Image (cartoon, rainbow, N blue to C red; front, top):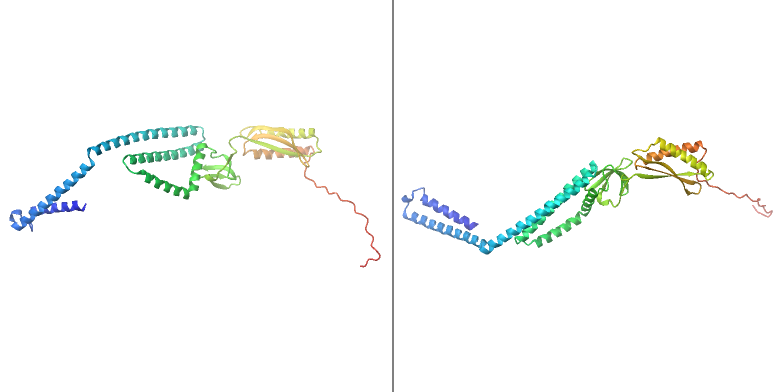
Length: 349
């Protein structure tokens, strides 16, 4: 670069001397020594320009030999074929991803559809970057760049990054599969990582739930090993009521059947109650009571309300019939005391 600048400088200097001979005098007014100096500078500049042109032509001839031109043409065809193949895979893969997510969105709720849309954009972005990376590596390999060192360096950097942020990556991967497989949606009542409550939001990093006590819990998706979703299907409630052994089966059955009928009349089957209360019979014999079982089907959130209502009805009917609720009793047997011992006359106080 310095050589070229020097040659250009000499050419400009020669032109300036040729146009202006010392102090702005015309060339014909210059003396012989000034003309000779200008002539020498012009010759040197012309020689420098010729050398520069020769170097440039040699460089062009080096890169555009017939063998290299054929290699360039072959590499261009290879790159074109590679880009066509990558483009086809790109379009087909993007179409399949969008189709899969569209089918899942049709079966999802409004909140679930928003979550799936977010997951779809993320998956599509990851797929796009992956295909760009494949295309770039392929083009570099065709033009002769050694990509093994680049891949090795990228692998080492990836291992270091994964080691440092493995918990974050685990949360993101778990969140991605949660959004795709729809283990739970916003509004579901679930149990996650020993926390139970209503799902407020589902993100790539964490899931937010609100417990029955109003507590807001943020759970990293990587901590969710098992999911219990109480909102997917109706909840079967098995209600056990203890009755004393002194109460005969007929009296107990009549009282419990009356309680079930009254419960079913007051809590008509609808959105929350899917099946009426049914008396199943004697379920177990405890130490101080006979356990009778009543069953009904309800939503998980409503079964607490129905259970309290059934308890109140049972208590009222059992009180009217004079049937008490048994409780554990402790019986103490005391042996009679023996005759008092006579004191010996020889005993000394």
